[in-house]
Length: 156
Image (cartoon, rainbow, N blue to C red):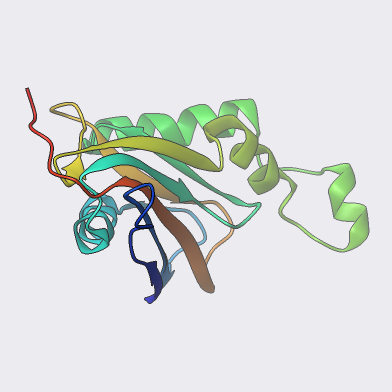
């Protein structure tokens, strides 16, 4: 993981931190729960009230928020295959074979913006942050950028 931290601007009280989560998936298709890694970046940022952007940084991957339940993960995989099935795509004329992975990125989205309250992710009870890989088995990066205020707040 690499990081950059800018301390609060004395005039605004705003701070930001950028980190890259680096990992390599074991399979071509994989759903990786990255919630705790994102939470660690938020906590290290010192931001108490703000936002965190989580971006896949790869055009054959996605970042999304949903429940971490095995049946649902299978459903998401099957749903994405129904909407963007493996097969022959115009993109393959370029020598690539991952046309469906590019379309799955469009279906699930390449980034999410999440609230930060009291220095922590402010997620619902079942919400988890996922990195979805559709053309893996090589080194990949996920950008995590935290922006916000560093003054104490109170969660209601």
